[in-house]
Length: 132
Image (cartoon, rainbow, N blue to C red; front, side, top):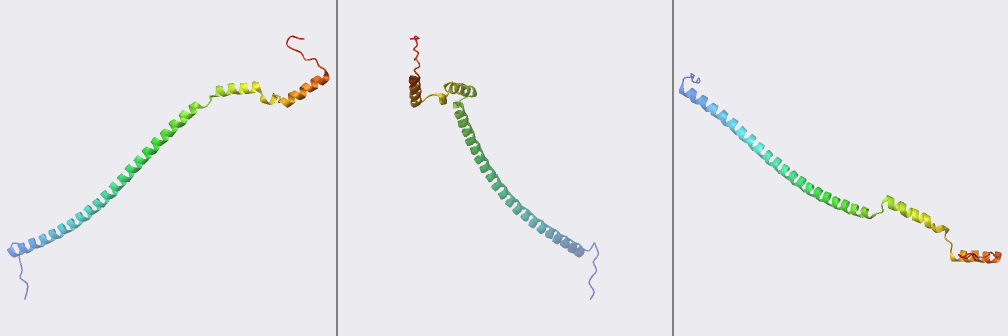
C-alpha cells in the first residue's frame, strides 16, 4: 500500500507539522535548561571561589595593618631613644674636654716619686709659690 498523500490544508498534515515543531521546541527548551543549569553551577562555584579569595585578602589586609602598626610603634620607640643620644656639637664639646685632660700625659704616683728623687739628687731648689 502506498502512503496517503496529505496536502498543506489537510488537518492531519497541520497537526503532524505542529507536533514536529512542538517536539523541536521541547528539545531546544531542554537543551537551554541544561545549559542554564551548567551556567548556574559554574556561577555558584565562581562565587564560592571569589568569596574565599575576598576572605583571604581581608585577613591579609588585617595582618598587614597590624604589622604596619607594630612597625610604627617600633619606629616611634627608636626615635625616642635617638633623642637621648648626644648631638654632634655635644660630642665635639666632650672631645675638646677629653683632649684638654689628655689622660695619657698624666703621671702615675710611681713616676712622680721617681722624678722627685731625680730632682733631689740634682739639688735643684724647689720653688714655692712665694719664690722662697
